[in-house]
Length: 157
Image (cartoon, rainbow, N blue to C red; front, side, top):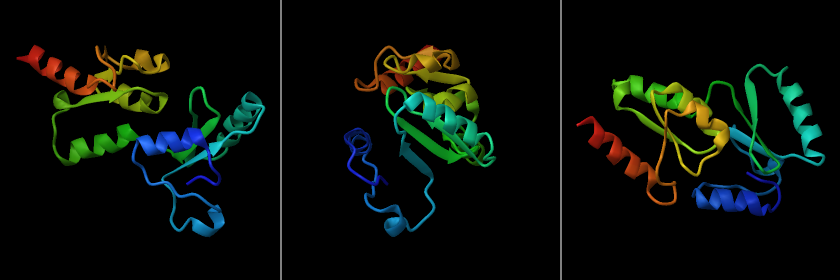
């Protein structure tokens, strides 16, 4: 959902083939959103710090900020890629030795920290580099994930 045209968000969501709803939130939102993304007004740093302080008093939700853009993402505490994958791994009784995770942005930090075989995409955000065990040789636009999986498997034989 976004309330008005925003080229950055449109490009992001179109690229991910995600459903986006545009319009007046009071009229079109008919279910609880999983995440909420908002545009931070200028001055960005001051308003970002205000949001950080505000969310210290909201126990069930967290906020993270997208790098190099003025967006904040609000999400339910404990609901992230890592917690979801952990539930799938447990439900399917998968040995964690057989789980490889890949990330390229700060919203992947929990995922990289939570699993032993974690890869940062070589074109990924360096702020999360310390949380990954490996760095891919190819980026996510040039089959970096599949290349890294094949390389990882061949080294284990």
